[in-house]
Length: 97
Length: 405
Image 1 (cartoon, one colour):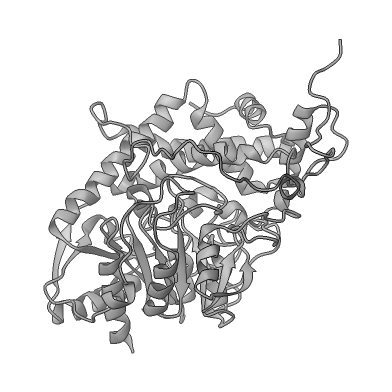
Image 2 (cartoon, each protein chain N blue to C red):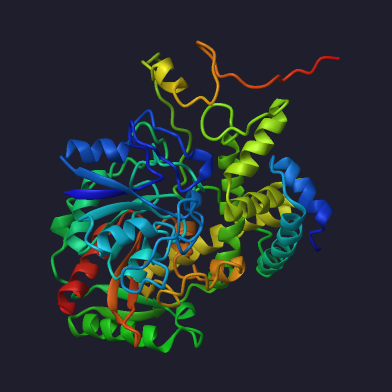
């Protein structure tokens, strides 16, 4: 099932990427090549195989629910591209009607 | 211990770029666990090393900050993604170096640069402070000029860490003591799927010469089978790109890293910051990962990939009932020319054929030098071991190294 330019645009939107027309063209070709190679995975019979999400099969690891010191707020805000005194600053999230 | 650090591991107060424009001014507010441990052992951190952007690549050509050259032949790649770390050791700029290995990113550059590189068992070394690419595959490991250096560094960085819940509560042995030089009675497997007609003759012969030496010293060499080998690349690239697309969602220009100028709303801010900040290969893998996770394709690709991952892991479980370790080539070729594969992502992916299986199965692997080809380029020999049995692969590696001398 070939990946069309429309599919590429849809996936780019999901991934929050903006692609040029040339990139869309290139990615649709390359994704097609790569995904048709991936079709190999349909060869082995996996109907009774459980998916493996983790190689060291751990159950949940809990720690004691105790408040511990965290990193200082100032340190954590140091890399902010824009900030107020205490918060990260971003453009408007809620649009006015 | 003078050590170089791949620029994907956080060092407090230093820029950590991951080879990406999106982190060009990012200064880490904390030390990764491996850095804390090296500091406690009086390690001297001498510098940070270039890499493929977010560790995505097999050649260290996908870097926002320039291509890394192989010191043995500067027209060739050093391998990747930890190319800078391999070169730092190979060129004598550092005694040892740390890299990260998601599908061969320590072992393959070690092979291309003629040094030793170890990927520990998944969970052996804490990933706290390692910038994530594919969380169920990533593992930090050492490079060195010889096996005992690598063993020493592993001893320092290994062990459980409460900050990484996937780091294993398994005791850390003294790896230097495991270098006994004795291989008699050791059962060594040669996976028949790895030694096909397609394998370069020179590489095959160089490895077989080493296998003969092991046999001569009392090792028992057997052929083993890993029947699902042909599906490893497909499973690997589906699962790692899926994990990457999720991990890299954090780069949004809001809290740190590059922010596009003049965005009118927050969605535009995310989209433009990411599009400006990420390079070509990272975008391609995010696209692929988003595609295989998207509605309608999740079952066909991602779920299927996870099922095949289990089959591949079971292949190794079965093989390790009969043998103590496996010997394989590290890479199907020696160092290739700069630019040779950049425009052909699938060919580049296929060059990882011998290394990705260790990450799919979570087992340790080491690459050691194994002679040179007719062009004078180093050949790498890989030894794969059972989960948490780094001791055996280090012992075999050290034995072969002494034989080389």
